[in-house]
Image (cartoon, rainbow, N blue to C red; front, top):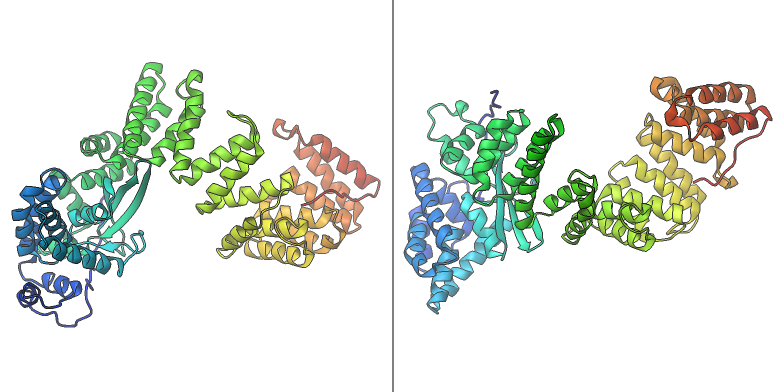
Length: 539
């Protein structure tokens, strides 16, 4: 198996001092009640010459504390003290001692509660928990304690690696019974300590570390290795690692297993084997759903709706999608919006469709924001939020959003009609994606045939269609693009050229897939032969 080698380039910047104070001095100050910062503690700790051994002891003690923290608070006193003797800046140590002293109704609990707050603030000042800006964590256990200190429950985990951050932890945490959030932690200190155990640091890499931890029963490592092997199509070995991880209640492992067995089911030719794989898919998604995974609710709901578990179970998909949407899953809300709009699997209900479009849009789903704008235009409804959402996408160079902004301004949907702004957005879209056939065709068609005379720009429409059709042989062969091209020539008074191109469009529509548009194309051809242009409600 090919393993990606990543050089160790980790530089830890836990504090701002160029020369960290001696760790024992910092701890003595803290023990005497003097004010020391969390940054000073971590700087001193990660500068210790025996860091690998001390971090290994810290991890062992924290693992013991994690196993006792929920059910046996009276056993936390000695373990918490041992943790702080190893590293006084441990969030785990202070968290368990706070629980221990609160159980004893001792005022000592407040001291440790303050340290828990200070350590959390230290982590939050250096990250936001996203993959791009993960929280720093001393150990993987500390990451779990962090979410527990915020009244969340860890339900899944997996190590990740990138060139920028060789060793991070993705932690799935349940805030409510139906809401699971992803929180990322940077474990650079662990990585540094482990690398010091190797004589040749250039031979040390994250995957080797993950294999080492996976063999020791680390569920996050097992899930990471299983996911990596699955990506390399080594499915049987991946399944072994993922099943080991799933036994500890790791929903990420269950989700990986469900996807692997779905792939196997899709390729199985024997009905009994296919059903066996589908049953395993169901089992793993149900495990993940029990842990609160909205992703699993959505995935299983779609499988039900697509009939993979029989026609009698198709309707079971709707409550799963509803549950996922209620748990802030934007794709589930988007799917329900489409179902209610089209009346597929549910009664057609435009108000409910709009509500689901809005929910998905509020969650930042770009496809939903574009779809909602088209919904408003088609159904002649108005909502000023649609313009704001599209403008956010346009700032990210989303050409389709720019086209839709042009449409909203042209029709006055959610804003006042403004042809100048409409044309400006259309031109911005083409400038952003000059060879995107769908974008160019929609803009050219609108500016050619629109019934809004002040919106028409036939010369510009012909210019962008000439460039597209002369530079894209694929677009040059499609009847819908040929139709627009011909209409642009007709609008500019060149009917012979329009007729020739429209004849190509009619011929290209001979395939069955174009049966629904042949009559329209022929009608346009007849108009061009009569020296007539095309006008319709567009956008």
